[in-house]
Length: 235
Ligand code: SF4
Image 1 (cartoon, rainbow, N blue to C red):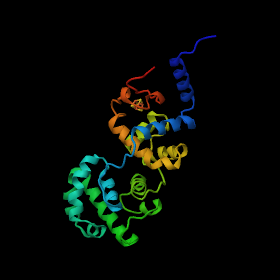
Image 2: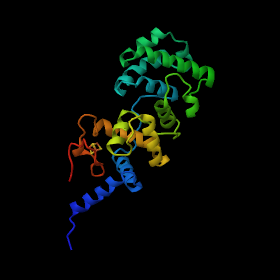
Image 3: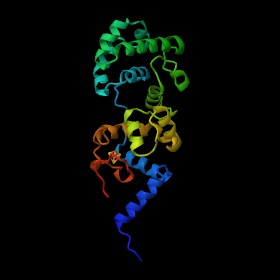
Image 4: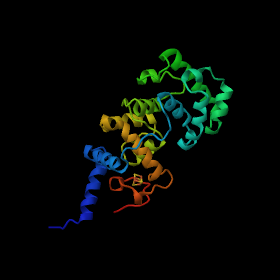
C-alpha cells in the first residue's frame, strides 16, 4: 500500500477544497482562522455616533481612513450635529474636507445627508437599509458600515476594496461587482459573522493580503488559499 505523507494529505485536502471552495467546512475554517487572528477588530474610522460614522464613511471613498480621521475632528467641531451640518455652507464644508479628495461631491453628499436626516428622520440616522439608502451619498457599503458597526444590525456584508480582493483570492466569489460579491458572501457566511467578517478581512487586507504583493509567507489562511497570485506556498 502506498504511504501517504503529511504533505500528501495536505495536498489532497487542498485539492478537495479546490474542487469545492464553498464547502461549508472550508468557509468555516477560514472564518475561524480570521476570528482568531484578528480578535475584536473594529472599524478604523473614528466616530462617536451613527451620524459621525455616516459622514466618515462618505469621506472614506477613494481616501485612506487615516486621512479621514485627520479631517473629521475639525469638521465635527465646527458642525457637531446633522442640524448644524444641514445649515452649513457648501464652501465651508468643502474647505474642511478638501484633503480627502472629490471634496465637492462629498460636501454635497454630506450636506444633503444631513438635511435628509433632519427633515425625514427626526435628526437620527435611520436603522434600516431601505431608509438609510435614501440619504444622498449613501450606497450599500456605507449602509452596511453604519448599520453593522454602530447599530449592530447585520443586513449585509461590507464590501470595500479589501473585502472584494480577498474574497476573490480565497475563491469565496468569482464576481467583481461589489453588489454581487456581497450576495455571494451572504449566501455562504452565517449571518452572525457578517459584521465581524468584514472588519477582519479589511485588517487582513491592510496588513497581510495587500493588493500588489500579498505577504503569503505570513498569512494565517495560506493553507486554505490557492489564489493564482500567491507569493509563497507551503506546498
Ligand atoms: S495566502 Fe496570500 S493571497 Fe492568499 S489570502 Fe493569504 S496573503 Fe492573500
